[in-house]
Image (cartoon, rainbow, N blue to C red; front, top):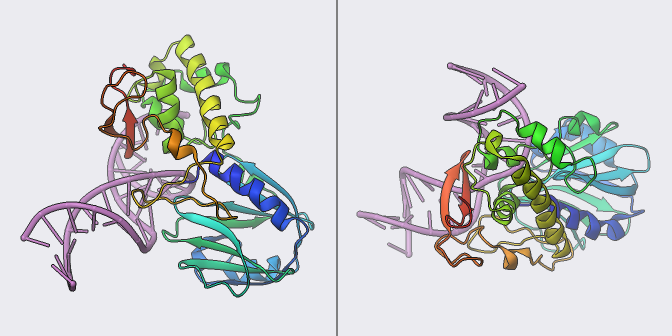
Length: 275
DNA sequence: ATAAGGCCCTGACCGC
DNA sequence: TGCGGTCAGGGCCTTA
């Protein structure tokens, strides 16, 4: 699933490809992909726009246009934003096609159809409720402590809550808790100051490593298969310590990695290292 | 305000 | 081999 490092990788890969390119045509095959405005209006508004600046907030891609509009893209589970030659064989599950002025196509493709695209003048209308950006100074151990205080939900569930910190998903939540040696079922409010400081650092470290490895790609064994716009896969999945490693030895102590379900999400942890 | 459960979707996987 | 049932899972919505 694309989380912060995967989305960051997308943005970095797309920036040189899309910078300065103009949209000369567009079509929407699955209207629900367009969250705002409606599909017909989206096509009318996107044609003629020129890509100017690129960013990311949490798991949202921000494709800024010279007019001041921003195309916001959330890939959710299985979305891909790809650039392909005009004569390329159409990717299955292609829901939006934007023709570029260099003849290539910017394609939104998504087998599960969970992903959404917004075209807005003010990104706050989409992003307002997001918590701090984990790699910014705005994300502090003190702030994290304040968010966890009194909470009875599991720390795993709270790490997935985008109001608390933006961009952490199932993979990086499990990996962060392993690094911090915290059991994922612990109530968020039960973590002490030292544990929160350790977790805060672990989140940053794991996300930074994910970015440095161009995100994670999961192949046939997983439902997700994030792939880079240029085609080369990310490599962070090779570095997972616990995620999708149920029954395999913990790289730290050798105990068998366990899988439980928390907040309806698969959760992987080492029962020896994470008490 | 918080927590828990349902919903959207489809491919993969399982059992027969 | 073919078929039906189950499951995963981010974010949003509803319910308690």
